[in-house]
Image (cartoon, rainbow, N blue to C red):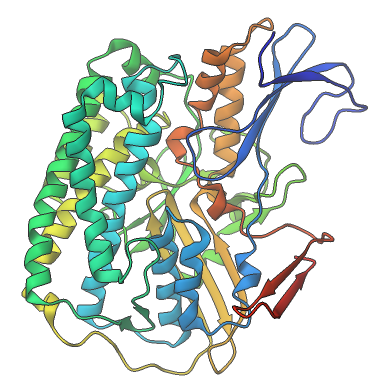
Length: 510
């Protein structure tokens, strides 16, 4: 097995509680680094003496310390700070912390400010979902899951679909980036957040420009669904891959719904359903503490959430699991439909093809992501038609400071920001639960199941390892977002310096 990602024999003592059989010599295969994701992680696969998979682990090997960084910071500065957790996910952390700042000051944004926020947030959905589908997800299908990795990427995808189609996709995706810059003040890390509002009014000229840009984004959504249908649904082998059991993980699901039980991105009620689609619970705000627990594992910087009422049952799926999943597919599993007409048609088609709900086939994430892209574009078109978007009332009067929770549906799944401040609005404590953190358990199960299916009798090659990597790409991992705190106490020390080079703060024992 002469391959750069395959390591030497692993030796150990007794069997550990995590399931690694170390009472015999196990061959360890390491996929390091994992490819086509945000952040840095690795997969460790252990083969028994026959060359079959004994166990596999999805491990996160990087650290972010934002839950400590924001301590001592005015809450109104937090959105601009946490947007730098990730350059891809910047708008979702910005928005969730902004909503949390509303709670800290016990204030609701004005109707105009809320519309601007929703417009901004949906533009991020279009930009993010397009990037993930075309750069990270589609290459496996358009170029081929076992193709040469030098070709199985964005460049290979453009070569396959044609330069003109590639240019068209980039042009229409840029429409979303332009809206983010127009409303947020910057194209990457926005600066327009205010507790109870927004710092910038929308002019009539900007509203009309957004209306034109919205049409381009709707066209992008329709084009994306057509590419998915032409490339995936018309290929019997890919349909088998998408609907079969190899990439199937049976969990509970969490997503947000509006008052009509339709998918909600910016705001809504959080809804849990079980493995059969039966509603378990609904919650809002701080009530998340009644339903979600986080478990620290010794082999990853990433914690593993689970349903508190079911109790910890280990990294297993099935009807009795306490693990749950978040993201595009879970949102569609949880809701009764989409809030826009074109997306609703695509939603109905998807569940008709699968023939059941909830869908546990994780390749359905890609399809659901394409449907949500179209939905977000339709949302933008609808909001931009409203002339009241240009009203001057963009900020509400603040109340006394205390505690706030902001929850949004990030493109990758449910995102929770929770802050406790003093009476002046200075952050004393922060907790972030990110989509990839919610999905830690299901991702690990998916990776192990794929490894057990494709690696047999010691036969390992690049193509088979990519079939293992295929198991995490539907979840659209963002490890920079997820590893925001180091579990336990460690001799880690971080020195933070101001712009003059003077020591500002030292953080120890995260």
